[in-house]
Length: 542
Image (cartoon, rainbow, N blue to C red; front, side):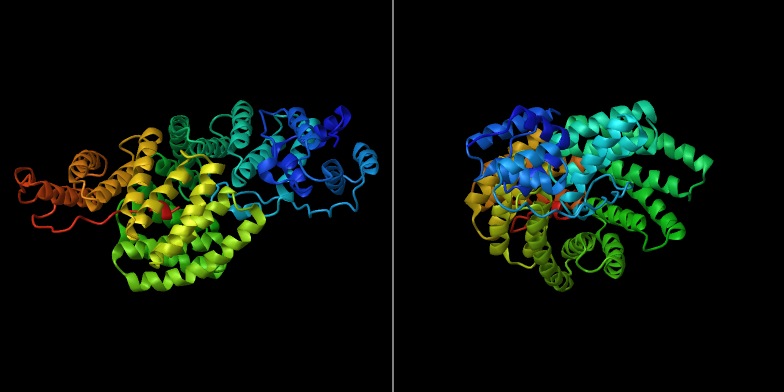
């Protein structure tokens, strides 16, 4: 079977010059995603040369003919495609996909949490082609070209191509800083999306440095906007919302709470209760309240937000489902299990439908599909269906390890909660193996004092207790308790749980002197006969 000629490779590189458009036309031609060559740097010619080699080796049946038919469906007047397709005809051309203009992502939320912003694979394709045309006619630094580059980088994030998103976002950020300035809102948006991408790739040090720099710029900009426009001006509120998001990423939840509470009150007054920006701030404030352990305040906020999102967006909208799951998580933390179960039963059906749709649109291994699968499995846990949750988590983890890598934050979150599920099912040995691997990876990628690392350490110690390895449990609990006191404080629920588990372990090994209690201490009272509960990640709270 023949591949592509140099002339044909050049034509494909000119017409499909970016990862989105190139991979879309390959998929339209019937080439499975897993068999696409990797995109190296920005060399479109090299990519299509690699496709040619694969075609020569029999990538798919009638590969060249199918590829030209797919290309012609998008560019029916291209002379190279016309001539080559006529020579390699394999039947009727592929149908043309609808080409719609992509919706602009919510610029006030830098984390692309809504995968339905770009629903049709043809949308990023059209955007990539428009970007190429604008760069050709207007130049790379023109504001319109930079706006399209920012949107395309966002789309690459949505569809899981983080390496390509990083390269495009880094280039866009450099150009926006040069042409618009470091403190322009569009520059901020690109910087935050780049930081998000770096986190997804596991480059947490670079991401934190970028967030730290962005925090300083946001604080300065917010002060100037409040002075110039006033506290309630839409631009001021957008900056405040983005600064609060940055504070969350940096782990400064108390500062984020204060700022989000002020911003939410002002948005409700100026934009209205049901405005998308108001919803976004309410969602982020609820997340922050959970991180701070104020579950009652989080419940009140999530209940209001859920009712409004159901009314304005519909019950099966991804944002509505996120709020419903966060409320169910909060109800569980508060011990209102009946209300949690009713809500989770409703959410289970909606997630089942959403997962089916996303697998159809994005594919089984797309990060957004995997996130939906993860959230669905969390709902199954809340309903007590641990066996079904285990099956879905195991499938999701296998796909994440293959698609994202074993050290990716999403992969580690799934591994953590799968281990939690295994414990619920009594498979403590499997849970120990998985927790030990997850703990080692989280210590390496996040650091030993990161809240997620400490949660995994706490659960591993619990597992060791269940297996009767009390000495190993003691060592791990002592280290974890010291770190939790430093990170969370002495009175945080997780700190108290570890203290209780340590007391139980000391009792088992007969070290009564070590478990001496003082009135008012942060440790659990003597005589706690069982170890405290485990903690799933607050990863079920996006």
